[in-house]
Image (cartoon, rainbow, N blue to C red):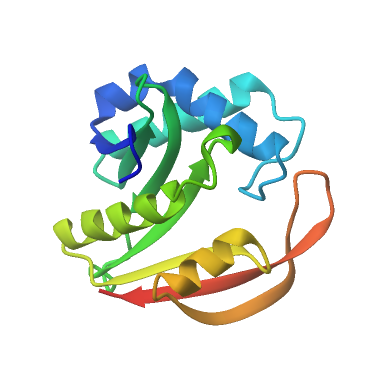
Length: 175
């Protein structure tokens, strides 16, 4: 792990206490152009409401939430595992909202978050993981280097935060 960085799992109560810090990371990523389901400008209260919902998902046992903290204890990254799946897919989970604050990038944190969420999936008894990402972005290269298999690309699937359409590539990994 990079010097001074710590990745850990949050329980629901702790996730609820960190809504503002998690909103800071989300706002920074969306402002920086990350296509993660939100448009820019993103209202702070909307970002806070999203994280309150995530905390409730953790409380309900539907999600696993990991955070990365810097040496000062500031949240600089996060990733989720959506474990609530249909009855015929109890072995599967979705990786979602891997976010790294722009000030913490280029230090291997995303790779560390990916490895940590894969370990969390194993602990949850999951053997098939699925995720999607913007085609041609840094994350796509990260997943490919991490042993994830590209399944396919859908043109014009989503919008970038500035409104431009973008393609999305789906990946899976067998654990």
